Length: 209
Length: 262
Image 1: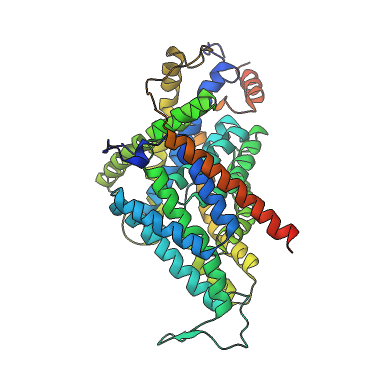
Image 2: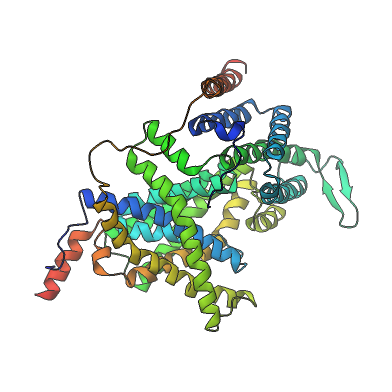
């Protein structure tokens, strides 16, 4: 790695990268949601940025970016209570971040495992939040599925959970997959910002030797 | 999110941190007092203020989402909620569709709706009358680290940039034959060709931004100064302490109600 003159993985440069990438993650989340609504897709698609930042900078920075997105989108949208869904984004960031740190976010299989884990975690965390804050009905596309589950005789918490599983599977699946696709195309110097930087460097040294 | 300069009204002249305290006070009051009439009063007051501040046009979007939420909440909770006792007579039956609305379900929906709708209206008002750069500076002056307030301001500057990128890329891909209308599968397929360039472009810019920030002394340990001078008035102090008082008293009220007066 003779080309790199500044070590951007720790110290002061890391703070600078954090100060750029956290707002960028929030903005990518926001734009993802905007594209989804422009294409009239029945999904949120607003955790792509969180996944990408978590993969590049590690789980904790990703979590900050995810929570920040929910707070800022609730400021823009006017519904401050929806910022509580930021807890779901923390789960997304942790799963993707720790998988990347362990070097397990490289193949398609890894991406699929991450997708399922993220979807389940989001449904598990999202359902109680929706029940506590909104009483189960939040005024979105999920509500129709919740109503269907309720009419089958489920209680409101399990209805909210079961309705969120398939939607999250598609929604976070695309988010995690997009993050994975983009990561594969990033230059190595930016990938090295992740927590697992030492392993990557060692591998590359071995390869060059 | 380019913010225009409006004629300074009372709400716009308030110090941004005061509005943060006010939103805390309103949120706590609505969540813990749990009074439908208080919620109604806050809702009406904020609607009047929104009309006075001339935000009616922008508020229409929020109003539509509140209405959709109300319809969803009342119809689904009123007919299907498990708290309903089906042995009782329904309150009313919707003609033609034969949907039966029950009292318990409607009350359940009203509890949640009276919590959310006034919060949406009042917080919309408070945050829309705030300049986000001023808020970031207010946070910095209030003791938040410079990094954090920089990230906050930077987010509001980056979102319109990426939005512009998105529009350009969408037009470019459409010119190359990308189908952004049509059935659901086609629209799904159109998502990645738009999203990937947006993200790739923005990540390629990161290194340049880092160098630019570094040369401008972002990591310097010297105390940062700001250009904007935000004045604080007596009204700011009064409203700040009033909202803190309301927040604290609502918490005490909640504790007394749940633990002492059982």
